[in-house]
Image (cartoon, rainbow, N blue to C red; front, side):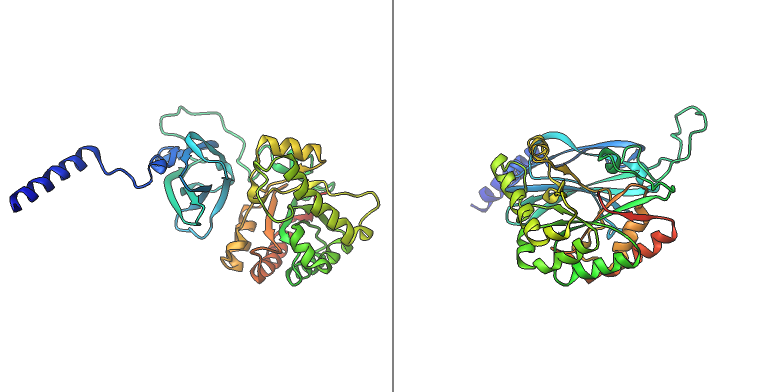
Length: 354
């Protein structure tokens, strides 16, 4: 009998070695980053492709992690639509980052909040000529500014009339009765203007917190009623999410706003956008605004990590996202003071979306 059991175990082992273990969730078997290849050296604009799916799929998110600085995570893209076959996850403009070793991380999140992570090592080498490439004419120096920024796509200037570089500070998920007034006071100290993307339910809870934003001439913009994703919601659902918030803003601070002004900017929750949303937003009179720099202050990595992520990656016309509500905290306020001080010394001015 023991010999028969042992023989059966050997046979089973042979089957496993021949065919491999089948994953417990076959739908996620192909998940991961498909390109660039692991260990690839990349330059310029790089298309990152992969597969991201699961039977209990909620969303996927792609990030870039500098080697030895895993706390300095750079958000690249996110979607609530699965990719069952290889598809484009993002276009990574490597000229924004210093040469060196990095990791691409694809996180596939399930509806229960658990997730799997997939990594690819890459080397960014924009300033190193490929070994097999013949000598090229001297190129213009790489500057820390993409050829087409989100600001220029929105028709916004990257420099002031006097030539000063502009940084567009934006704050999401407010208003908050504690953080929003503190942020407004800091901005006032540095003669800075910003854009506040408000959530309707938070405004409903703390209407007085929006008054200093309006009184000090900052721009108020739409971040939906309750931070639900607008992708796949349909025209009626999108209109409800936006109109309820816009109506409450007008009811709360309408008398403090310039005559005839209206909300004209929309930041979709999670940055998730599809063609239907783009068309619907345009029909409702909104321009969609995402961001260039996300220090992930909502993760509360520490004020120093938040401020350095913005200061080190700032470029003229960059749109920065931080939070005066949601995951915002005193870390955000402390970091903002450092950001305003450091970038003011570099000649930056801080404008709101008009």
